[in-house]
Length: 192
Image (tube, rainbow, N blue to C red; front, side):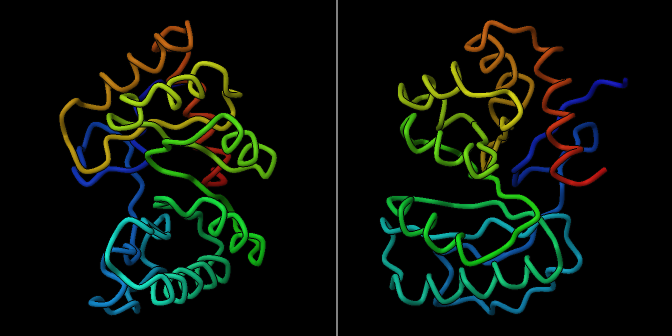
């Protein structure tokens, strides 16, 4: 089995890394952007979600989030979620949709929240910001490997190779073991 790195969510694509294309309207842009981007042309719908720390109306964010989830459901595309101070509302809204896959990107949450995600078959992705959080590092250490992804998000530094190294170290695994597992997770998520 060929081994490679997968960066499940990045704003800095590299040709030597597997990076699924994503399209969606971020909650920060919910009041200013046209929500009609062509979601059929991407691998995943994202990053979409709710951010209760930004100045955009919760009602507007929720309406846009629901519109994009409905389209992801129709197209049978996985979604990449941006969730800030809105975990309970996001989980409640997700109940209304049958989605091909759900990835909580940049997960910074409690072990209890993580377990609720795993119970629903949702993936968690970790990057530089996540790995600065003690509670997220605790999740990384103990979470089931079949729900794990790594990402660089909006910063190209540190590179994805360093994120994998740090996650592997937390999990007492080798980078190669982590790469193989994330490859399996990706293949399952994308139905490859």
